[in-house]
Length: 416
Image (cartoon, rainbow, N blue to C red):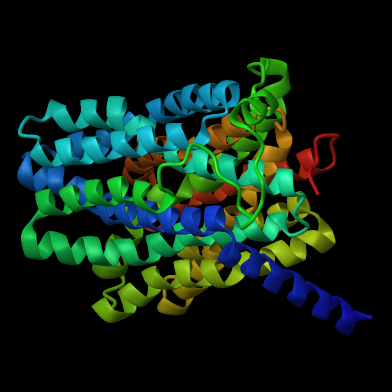
């Protein structure tokens, strides 16, 4: 009966929300991830302006800054492997958050061209692992308590990171305009440090009020694992590689869609802002829906559809040439991230269940690789294809991802 099934799904969603609200660990992780998304997204659109206006580098050199992201997966893997061996999720989270704070403050004080590049590659590479440690800690608790709404809990906590990305760019732009890029970067460092506050200083924690956690030695004994072999990591690496193809269009879109809207289409500022802003709104709306739909058709089957949305979105950008097409593309892109933001981390953890922190870190650091590769492809593609045809490049990447996920969904590594 469809009505009974729908009612059951709504009840499950509400149960997940109640679990997050009632559990100190989940509630604190939600706040911490919101602060992380807020700070990072405030700085992301302003980095190029800071390099060009404050350090007086060329646009070409500023574009190369994004290549420093390629060190993030290495740092993430090292932190994840250490976490899986020691079980010290929250301790490593604090060190990574502190690294992020120091890195952004150092960036704000930089007065030489080479300094932001070194800071990003060496220090900020470790800051991205903070979020993966929180997801690993949440996973540990969900597994220990055998929560029947685990996927919904993870999705809701992940929504906090997306919510930070909705608010951050606006606040970052306002602060940079009012007080300068250096103040904005220092504020990003403050947000990174503020992540530590809601988590407190406990080494581990139970999510359920009144629960009796095991002793520290028992918890550590349960969590210590051997470093996974490369063969065991292949499904995770394959999925992460396909996700890189999905994500590669984001730096191209954020780099060139605003320019296309302003200089070629001559849209009013309010309309351009609405086009850019509708994606994260659609994403937030669709994330809980994605969890419900995934229970019916399977996570990876839904991800095939999500990746296909990305192909359609970029074709809209490349071919339509009007405001309606831009809105359609951004709505489709909201569908992409409504699916992958809600389910990606869950699939990654299930593909390497014996090393949860490693899986989380590898998957979450993939966005850094995609940003670096997408930025490089954008600079080359726009010179060859021009605007708006540069968006054919991410459409092709999305087609590769769609096909790859479809093949993976039929293999023995498929995750439901």
